Amino acid sequence: MGERALEGRAALITGAGGSIGAAAARLFAEAGAQLVLLDRHERVVDVAAAVRQAGGKAEAMVGDSGTEDVVEAAVQRVTGLYGRIDVCFANAGISGGAKGLFEQTADDWTEIFRVNLLGTFLAVRAAAARMKAAGQGSIVCTASVAGLRNGAAAAPYSASKAGVISLVQLAANDLGGTGVRVNAICPGLIETNMTAPIFERARERGTSDRIGQLNPLRRPGQPEEIAAVALFLASDAASYINGQAIAVDGGLSSSLPVVPPRPSAKA
Image (tube, rainbow, N blue to C red; front, top):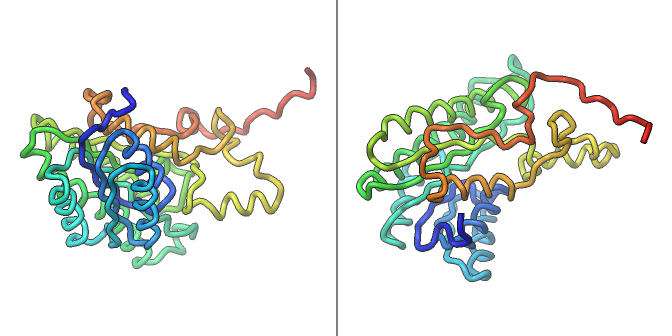
């Protein structure tokens, strides 16, 4: 994949005010993409400004990616500014906290599914409609290892991300023959705005060296590591990858839960 793998292409990134979305904005712009960045938090304005200061093209939109009118307006903004949309990184999501299954309310589930699953569907549908007309495009959705199996997050978040994986598979097949690809990334434990409390508590307890200990790499991931996979999937280097949910988790999902062995005291 060349350094300017998205040269001249237009992209929408949702959830661009968060850690992974901001990292993707930087990488996509460095690869030559022209961007519209959507997030419900005002910090997306700063992300777009940083991209422009570095020499890239980016416009910010503040709005809720779980709302149909907002997503449609964001896609129209991309095509209005750049005359096309080649890439959609449907990355927006919320965690919903860590309450147990039977402590969750119907409102909890509704809001998490509205943002994580409905919002992803809205982005996929709106982007794909334009991409089909052009005969090409790449849609990348942020799912999670929590959508692959139990144990990584609370119930509604996990269920919503399993839904994203299913949506990707359905969309890839419904778009068969159009030249539009749809894939998902399944991050493991990544240091982001969303997971910040986990890292802060570990540092307070002096146990930060144990974060990520269950995966074979024995460490958490960084937003740039997820963004790099999103860039790959968005580019022509991934032209034969379609309908896939790719785990980027240090190997966590490669094994059943095990207690990692303690390092030997012997040299």
